[in-house]
Image 1 (cartoon, rainbow, N blue to C red):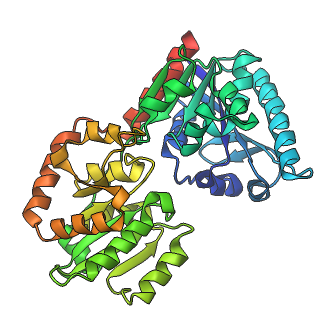
Image 2 (cartoon, one colour):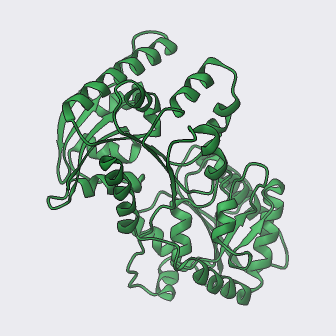
Length: 413
């Protein structure tokens, strides 16, 4: 049986180049683009029709004209624009209403079995579910502070979002990223709505270069390598990482160490200035965004991998670091918010070093000093990690198949 799915998604930055160039070369949001790829396979029983929505004036400018366009190796995609019509509130209202009407027209024209709508279009998903009465699967990329504020918020916006999230969706699929979805979804959604909280998949590069040859090519000498990978925004913990590095490098009894940051973001300039002011550019390297293959090489050569994400630490990058067998340093879970309780369930205490993020760079630098002096402990932690996650991490093919199965079940209901 063929499952026909109408996919409604915002213009994710990782899909923008493909939409503009007409050549399929996505980056980021792998859970979404791998689902789309599967839906366009000629022999797949899962078929998709995709509509992409600009959600602000900048995205509209980058996307260009509205209408249907062909993307090589993907197919025809409908592009819906965003139009500035006056003050920000009026522009938002007019575009939400317009895009909602267009979603209804697309749903009527497509006549698919299921409508798969991501969190950025939750109002449109709510109308399609409540008023148009279609089978809607809402896709959430995790839980963010905004979702927590919606639950008990008193303003008009909070009430509107509560109305949207409490719609009769046929299923809600949420990424398990350690952000506390287990606690928040029961408060955010209607009790009767089925939900699945799924870890993202991992793809491990067939790395042919040895760790030793990579260290030579990266000019790492015999230094201990501490790696941070992620977008350079405050909530990801990049500031704590750089501050901890500065503090660590001021210690007199530590081994030679190189700190490496891979990623781009709004904090890059400020962090670069801090490193330059401390005269530590030879020991703290900011590499910017790197190709995926090179990221795997850094996983291979690092001695310690640090994640300081305040919203949860089961991100794509962290799952790949686990699969690659990195020695992990992560924040302790928060019993108040539930953030990283899922991380606790995945990783036993001996599989990763956990530090108190409320103490910031002080606690992180102490953890790094302890590990850098003890290579035997690092090795044992890696062995414990491999034993803990080997049966729990899925390939991306298996992960996407699990989501397609959910859509197939909804289509038959």
